[in-house]
Amino acid sequence: MIVIFGYSDKEKVTLLKDFFGRIKKEACFVDEGALSQTLASILKGEGDFNYKPSKETAILVSGEDREEVAGKVLSALSKGQIGFDHHILVEEEMLEKSLADIFSEHSAHRAFIKRLAYLQQLIDGTASLKEKDYDPDDWSELKLAVANANDYLDTLVNDYEDSSKLAIKDSEGLEKLVNALRVAMKTLLERKH
Image 1 (cartoon, rainbow, N blue to C red):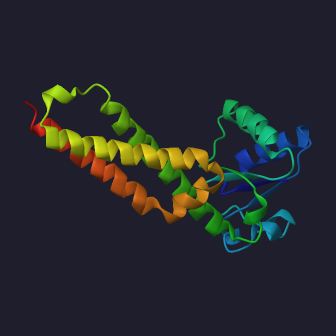
Image 2: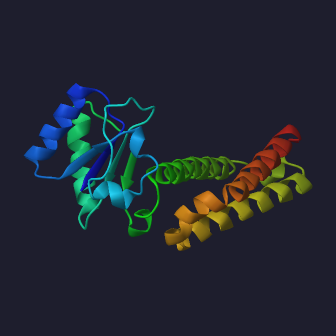
């Protein structure tokens, strides 16, 4: 089952319905009236759809073959200039959550991933620095910040299953690492020999 959220343009909705009919995939359409409903109730066809405009759009794909279906559907739809703000593969633990909570968690996870990418860029930016060019204390601070950041990233890689939960719980911890590394780099560069 595929859930389409937030499209109020009747022409695009008609195109989407035709597309899902052609590929023989069941799809339901909901709008902001369904935000308080659980995903399970929406998947049972209990969602509202009154063409209410929404700030965001989403596609949620459930079922055993959800990854394959999502890839094919999104690829085909992008060719037709139909995009979504959220692409969500439905996991069992999402079913009893409201659609609004799912979107909130998804947004938090996306923001977390962007900050992780930024942290990696900061780490990568230190690779070209030469120890001999800097104050030993500043260099030590930088190396400690880089080591802490790498440890954090290694923990995420080794425990990927919990990384989405960490996105919601530990955004402050990530932000502290980003700031520590930025400050260490700034201090180091300001006091270059």
